[in-house]
Amino acid sequence: MSQPLLGLGLKALEAWAQEHGQAAFRGRQLHDWLYAKGARQLAEVSVLPKGFREQLAAQPPEGAFDWMGRSRELHRSVARDGTTKLLLGTHDGLSIETVGIPAEGRLTVCVSSQVGCPMACRFCATGKGGLQRSLAVHEIVDQVLSVREVMEQRPSHVVFMGMGEPLLNIEAVLAAIDCLCTDLGMAQRQITVSTVGVPRTLPRLAELALERLGRAQFTLAVSLHAPDQRLREELIPTAHAYPIEDLLEDCRRYVAITGRRVSFEYILLGGLNDQPRHAAALAQLLRGFQSHVNLIPYNPIAEEEFQRPTPAAVDGFRRALQDRHVAVSVRASRGLDADAACGQLRRRLEGSLEPVLAR
Ligand code: SAH
Image 1 (cartoon, rainbow, N blue to C red):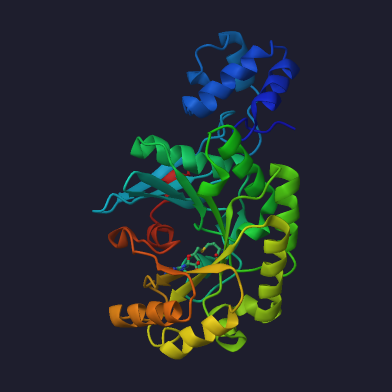
Image 2: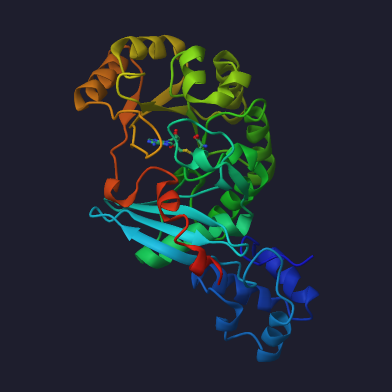
């Protein structure tokens, strides 16, 4: 089986070179061109013997356009605040969203872990189209390289908050984190994995992270969005199969295994879950839990009737949590003029992309 090279570490690239009849140092050269130079195609790697490149071009890899495993940029939309949303095309004619978010000395890349998503959260644009497939390691790492290339800046942070549910693609997500840290020099602490919760997977994520990465220092963010099971199920249909108490119990096990505190995301939907009584119930639910709550004002999507919360409601919710000693922050809305809500760009462009996707 022939897989693209992006995502492989130094040792694996050296072994690959040798398997293809080349000296091991060819693997080190490929590593440099893949990660430091960001080459998009094998043809660009001028240090490799021409005959070798031609031989490889005759046997392309599976699951990618080229051995380097890079995507194609289909569309770019840049907001006034510099937030840059890319629509990237995969080898099999699908598309995913990636966002680069610049802020004082930081560049955060919001990456997708799947094409589409099966979780169908009611407020989420990605969920409206269902799942097409999970992404491979090279397709996740490519997103970070693509943002670096387009924004001409080294990403400092990566958040798995784009399309898809990372816990339904754990192996590739962990391998991508490993690659970002080992091959691109990022720190695990600058990486966040966000999940809406898949039954019985959080302890497994913790154990697999320790096994694969040696330590689990990335931040786990859990999309809670409601202080009780009834309201949560209304917003997140899949929560039906995952009682909120079980989810919190799995979070406690995650903390026990990794020693890391968990952060909870809470989308504020005007009039629905943003009232002081919801904040009080949330504080009660999280009592004694080493955690941090991140409030996300809802970004309106075309298909739904939800309202953005008023600034006063956001402020009141934050203060109600603070008064109850819950660590809380409010996520600033970035790039609203660039179809900021996850999955919106792709949905807006659907139908107009076929000519580009058809290569
Ligand atoms: N499936 C994962 C990661 C992708 S969503 C998860 O659910 O956590 C990343 C975050 O964006 C989640 O907290 C999600 O609830 C939030 N989100 C989705 N749609 C949104 C919208 N329209 N407005 C604001 N936040 C949204």
